[in-house]
Image (cartoon, rainbow, N blue to C red; front, side, top):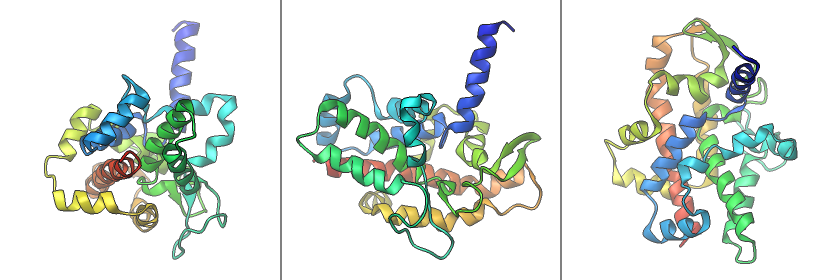
Length: 253
């Protein structure tokens, strides 16, 4: 392995540690969202981002974590809501909720520049996805499961990483295949309901659902853990995409 290859390998490992849902998870959310955009929303987003798409831009907010100029944004990807509590601005760590609201305003504001709107859209697509991952709404005790060391089929990792990417990547589906799979049993009634849900609805859902993430007997997670949690994982990915579309449809009327 030459020097350049080693650097690429190390960089890849570093980025895997940092990412939210993981590249594939965020792409799935973006792809699902595109499916449920209104014609008007699609048209306005196209004018804003050109030849890009929601799937491609969905993981940009993670990639810039390696840029020192964006170091201040590290706590924008999560929030903290302890068990039995409701979210309150400024009470606990993590700014994801405030930033979703802030970027929504930027996109609605006719006075903001195209560049400002592009950055806001990239973050909004990413953060709404993040907030559907139960461990991105942390309990304030273990860094959203990052401090919970365990194994995934014998590989050393942590609980947060299992939910961000390990269970998704284990199925070896492309993001387009996964998104299509999630929409096979589409329920239009639920889609309309989820699109209308408020931001705090899915934040508090993640708070309540994260308990299931910690429910395991052995620290070497294998098929039993995957089988037990697959439905929850896929529902949150699907809901993330649908609710993202709802938010974008309201912004780009």
